[in-house]
Length: 472
Ligand code: FRU
Image (cartoon, rainbow, N blue to C red):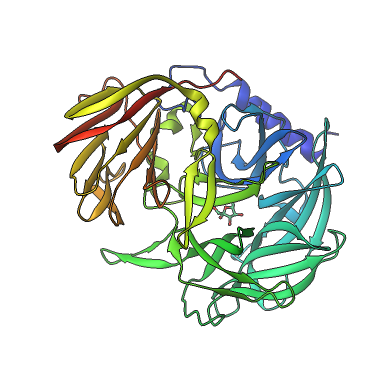
């Protein structure tokens, strides 16, 4: 008799054997993407035994959401990734509908993994178990079972454990929905990683003067940075779009002070972390050099996912680049990690007012932009405009064909753009604002850009590089 895990792995293997190796214009040259199937949230990020570990939500069996597994990849430089064996498959009674998102922490030379066992019942109800697994160097992930059952006072939506250590205790934050349908972040404490005691509600409606109708907070990440704490979370809400109720997928951060005794978090205003079309469920970790590094899912589970053309190639979605976080002038700033510079080749000065730069995988830096108006075409379907209003990304919707626009408001002084085969990450004023989006073009397209086309009334100045994917 084959075990449930062996059956699952055989099914994944069958998928991989049928993955066709055809020309794929959308496949990123250096961003992480799944070999096949659907990728969403980054999970279990860690710098462990000299290697970076990226686990991720993965449905290896189809390009759609479903009972998620954890995929796993490692890297020495945050740029090139080696795929590793499947880390967690949803094969036990406590995770029938997915090994959902979670995090990692190294304890005594072992990488401890925490994730949510998601269980759905007929009729629409669900429950959630917080589970533990371990990875020892040179071996495979081992499940250790449930460490926390569903707490009372919350619906079945309690998930995405993020664990860290402070003084003598381990802490865990979870995203939750309370019984009044209000999103909450709740905190637990443990000394042994198996027994967890509730510390309290950290964030959400009615706490610290917040008045909010967000119904769920997904993927909370609470971490110390410089002399403050940062809470990153994904508030879920509904908005009205042409009379239709549409779910939002935003990511916000709050800066504040976390009280480890009571769990209370005194915080300022929330700020949106990205102003592009594709950024959700980010996670951070601290590397051995003490940097706070973030990866985000370059996607959203919206109604447009099924129209992404990569599905015809057997895969969907990718991660962002690795970004270093710092607090400066009271703001959380995100900038690509310095390792990205290792990929730079063929430096070129940018000058003039109409500039065409070819390079599917490339980087563009523009300086002295204050007061200038500028158009940056990245593909026929994606254009970035800079003007007195700020920076706007215009993109053609894959389903409706309409042009949609998202704005970062502020004064643009400097830009750094990282382009890959089907993605663009725009860093404004050295990380003060970010706009992350996917786009899909092929050389056959009438208005193929394959790089950047700049147009301005003013003279532009900056630098341009090809980005050469490192050999793995
Ligand atoms: C966020 C999320 C998490 C959940 C996971 C499931 O994108 O919905 O809350 O754990 O994805 O794949």
